[in-house]
Every structure is written in C-alpha cells, then in structure tokens.
Amino acid sequence: MRRPWILPVLIVLCGSAVAAVLLFKGDTVAAVALWLVFAVLAGVNSPLIFPRSVSEPEARRRSAADGRPVVYWRPGCAYCVRLRTRLGRRARKAHWVNIWRDPAGAAAVRAVNDGDETVPTVVVGGQAHVNPDPVWVREQLSQLA
Image (tube, rainbow, N blue to C red; front, side, top):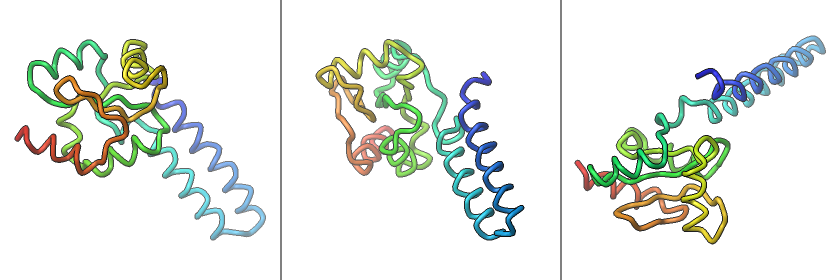
C-alpha cells in the first residue's frame, strides 16, 4: 500500500531540499515557486489523482457486466493525466488498470497497439481506442447514467 507513495514523497523531499537551499540564499519567491512546482508534480504522480486501479482480468469482467469502459494508464503519463482531469468526477465510472502494476494489463495494451505500451488506451464494448479525445470518453461515460 505504501509503494505508490514512494515517488511522490521523493519528489516533495527533493523539492523541499532545493527550496531550502534557495531560502538560505535569500531568494524566498523562487523557493516558494519551485516548491509549488514540485508539489504539483508529486500530486500528479500520486495515487490521489487516479481512481483505484484494478487488475486487467477484473476490469474486463466488470466491464462485461456493467458496460463501463476500461482505461489502461501508467503513472507519469501526461496524456493519462489530461484524460483523468478532463473526465472529472465521471472518471470514477470507468475501470482503471495501471499497466506498470499489472503485467496482464500491459500485455493487453501491447496486443492492441502493435507491441507498444501506448496509453491511455480505452476499451469500450471490446473496441480499443488509443489516446482518445477526453470529450468522446466523457460521452461514453455519460451514456451509462
């Protein structure tokens, strides 16, 4: 449970160290601005921004039962963050699979992307869509309500 927090904590610690050096040099504004950049970076890489991931077989099973999309993602992916933020609260309706934590999820993404692990890959009704427009994904999620 603690493993997903290692990278964000390291980012905040590094940002704090660099900000402390800037503070000792007397550059308060730069220290605060830099620390805020590191804090945002940590937040983007934290488990807080993405809904809880499930395994690929579980996501496929749930999607078959309720018709919700399966979103394959990985931490640090700017396109995944863009999709997640543009979906807003609707993102929780989808089944999210972290391909770095689930080898079956990574294999599923490679199978539909000619061997590449291109994310986000969204599967709706058995049809894979690579890096789809967030508006389109939002429409797919809205149809479920």
